[in-house]
Image 1 (spheres, rainbow, N blue to C red):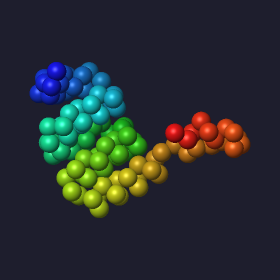
Image 2 (image 1 turned 180 degrees about the horizontal axis):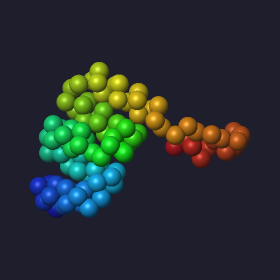
Image 3 (image 1 turned 90 degrees about the horizontal axis):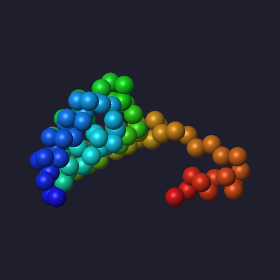
Image 4 (image 1 turned 60 degrees about the vertical axis):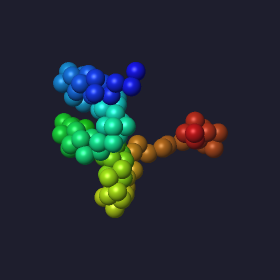
Length: 102
């Protein structure tokens, strides 16, 4: 309904209940992007619990946020770090690899 302020309130309440839920965090971050408030998005990402702070998803979201703030060098470093955290693709043969290609 185009009510981003209300959405932010509800996402923050959801994060109080489940602070490590990546989907909720991502939704809140994207709402801040939509509002052209990447600084607030970065603040949230810097405050996520330690157990997910270095996860692929959080590092990628943080990189995207820094990119929106024209901080391209730091964004690229986070993308590289996120790539290293990505699960490695293992496949048995060329037919099996098709499930990993999208």
